[in-house]
Structures are given as structure tokens and as C-alpha cells.
Amino acid sequence: MRLRSVFVACAIAMFAAPAPAQEFPSRPVRFVVSFPAGGGVDIMGRLVAIVVSQRLGQPVVVENRAGAAGVLGSSAVASAAPDGYTVLVTGDIPITQAHLLNKIPYDPYKDLAPLVKGVNVPTSVLVAGNAPYKTLKELLDHARANPGKVSWGTPGNGTAMHVELEMLKEKLGLDIIHVPYKGAPPIIADTMGGQITVGAPGLPPTISNIRSGRLKLLAVWGPSRVDIFPDVPTVREATGDASLEGFPTWYGFLLPAGVPKNITARLEAAIIAGLKDPEVTRKLNDAGATIVAQPAAAFGAANRAQTAAFAAIFKKLNLKPD
Image 1 (tube, rainbow, N blue to C red):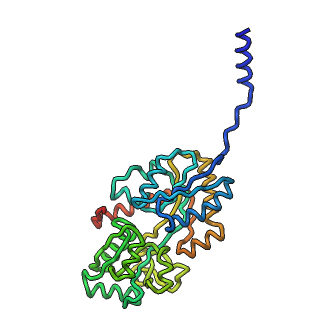
Image 2 (cartoon, one colour):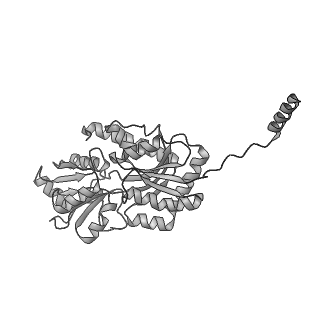
Image 3 (tube, rainbow, N blue to C red):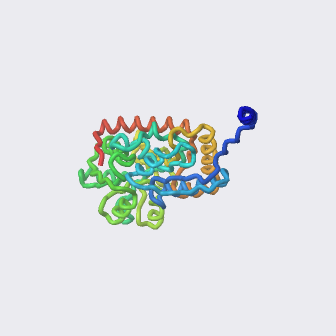
């Protein structure tokens, strides 16, 4: 009797239909933003999260884990479960540059997987609204005539903004003092207050002060002018040097390594749809960003190329960490 019961149980187990796997997503998805609330990365993440939530049919919770130039939040995602429920929203520094100058607790190419590059953001070249310079050429002529007297603030050693300054100095033979900061707000404040001659943060957080006249935008680093300030030239245009295109900062989305391909594909499609949503596009363009919406494979290849370029520049210029 007992043997027959075992046989029946085995037969039932053999012929019973397997329980269906729970379809992704079955619970809220978390966007971990590795920079402070209110900044450009955070703005992009929150705008896209609304559309992604609609497409996935689940809430998308935005959590800010700022610190160490994006390394803190990136580390948290790198160690998260690779199930698609945790997405990193960050900028380029903790992915393509940080490991070249500092010891960080993750490998950006082994522990994280590219998902979508969201936007490119140009670097601004700013002076105080009451500064005597009307053009970048006037400023650079002043720097040439007064070596060691012009100070140039960037978000820190090894950032794209710092590299752009070093390129400018090398190409034009200028002696300009680099002043590293820990982000855009103090650069903006010290530029307006005259503590530094030039401020060079990313463009988005400067827009309101440019429009109010408290800051003067002399140029932008990038391949083309920005739509919201069409009369402002690129550094390449202002100097006449075609090699001075710079390295626009990117904001993008990544996953912990090992997320299944079907889940990655679904998140990739939802995020690209979010970036291309007309209202999201308009708001990001108004914030000085250019939509890229680059899918995972191309995003990853671009990151590796950027890291290689920065490694060569750091070595050539003997750049040191903070």
C-alpha cells in the first residue's frame, strides 16, 4: 500500500504541469541615483522612471545614494542581486574614470553591465556676470598676457572638465591655475563671487544663473552648440582649434552584472521609450542635455573607448588623484 502511494505520488509529479515562473516585474523596481537629489542625473532618472513605471506596470522607486563622485551608489548596485529590480542611474565618472585614479570597491566592467546611455551634457565655460570678458578669446588673451593669474574651477581632478582644461592649456600654451571642487554648486558660487576667474561645471545646474545674468556663458565644450543657448559658440569654434571638442559628460543606466538577457532587454526598451517620450525629451533639452538613448552594446563599447582615452591622457599629463 505504501509502495503504491509512492508510485502514485511520483506519477503525479511527472505529469503535473510545472509551475509557471513569475514574470518580470512582479514587484517595484528601484532606480539608485548615485548623485544628489535635484542634480542633472537625478532629474533624468526621475523623468524616465515615470514612463518606465507605466510600461512595466510596476512602481519605479527612486533612491538617492550620493557620495564619492558617484562611487557610493555605484558600489551598492554592483553588489545587488542581478534580478533586474535594481538599476543604477549615474554619470560617467564612477564608470569610466574613477578606477583610473582611485581604488574603488567594484570593477565597473565586471561588476556592472551597461544598459542605456541616456544623455550627453556639455561642460560650460563661465565667468561672473560682471566680468570684463565678453568672449572666450578675450579671456584666453588675458590668460596669455597674465600667466598664473587666471584660475579655473572644475568638479575635481580627473574629471572630464579637468581634462578639457589641461587640453586647452597644452594646445594654446597657457598657464592657468586649476582649482578642483567637489561638485557644481561651489563652483557656481565662487564664480559668481569672483573667488575664481572661470567656472567649468556641467551646463544643467548653471542655466538659471546664466539667464538671470549672474553668470556669463562664454562657450561650451562639445561637438555642437546647445539649443537653449544657440548664440554661444563651442570651444572649438571660439579657439579655431578642431581638436578641442572635449568630453561631454554622460548620464546613463546600468545593471548589476548577470541580469538575465530577457529582463535586460525589457528594461532597455522601457528606458529608451522613456527618454524618447516627447515631454521627457523636452524637459531634458531645456535642462541643457542632449538625448542619446544608446542601447546596451554600443553604450558598453563607448565606455571602454572613453576609459582608454582617459587613461592615455592621464598618463600624458601626469594627473594625480585628489
